[in-house]
Length: 189
Length: 241
Image 1 (cartoon, one colour):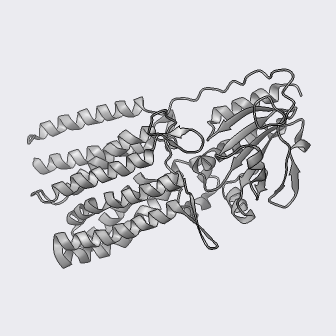
Image 2 (spheres, chains in turn cyan, blue):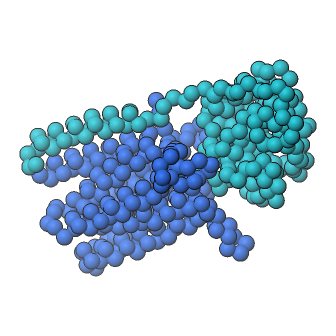
Image 3 (cartoon, rainbow over the protein chains, first blue to last red):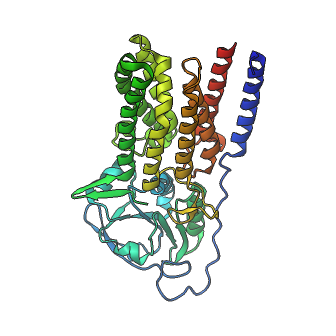
């Protein structure tokens, strides 16, 4: 292949094939999430599973104020177990923040349960990323254990009655968060 | 996954540690290979290029990451200078490092093409080390998969993208080392390196679950990879003309 026109052909073919491949392997648009109907009545035993009452807990926030899940009854709650060293946790934080800003006034809140990191690390991370929802410190990993959150991030959507309605392991897509929150907010308490 | 290494009171991030090892290894290897290929004069040129190239690479790696995470970085611009190892992107590092080295080399009359060939013989090995760091910290994690060699990471079994990247780097290293003893114009090894890097990004990036995106879901790294591949072919065309 010594002639320049051959190289030009190769350039054009590479360009077209490359662009075609890149468009083919793009990230497809997200599908909105659809929740299953809640079975009536929900199971009696508290467990971090769908259709079970969410296990209650009390943890301190970054100011040292205790926050209880049961005190948030009547609101839609996202419990997100996370750590600053976990890449998919970091990836979904802006998505959670956007949902918090959009739906907070309608009765949606987030409890970001941090796994065994110190106050300064967590506070600095929240501040730098402009995250305004409450971060709770699970210093001994007790709550994460009760919620079987061995893999971070793990996310639990709790409806207005305190029932776990959706559980996600791994980072959530934007449409999953907003879709789930909208459906749970629309339900009567 | 071992994201943190506890040494006494310190929690070191394994990804950051391996990146540091990769950089130190890369710098030492860069000067050693320059000595082998061009003797003391080229080694001296190499030593003078290392710092500007590293600095340009690190700054542009962060700039690249920030630009494609604009909704977050525009809100907190101090993130552009925050001490965060993970908020960097390789395409930015290569482009910025290359550009800084080229500017610096031109100003000081350094043997840029010969140095680029030395970089091509050095960078892949350093990248392979850095990829082990990605694996330990869980960065650059892959799409969920049911393939038998999937690795469990953040819940599901995922494509071991970090291992694919490391293997691609080692394969590139092997191929470029085989080219080095033939008679080619200066800069050919680097063109080969750029083409292989381009192919790596174009082919492996779709398996990543954390790609930086443009509108329409296009992956930025693939477009950068295609640009590198085309640049390498165009360079070779001009050499043979």
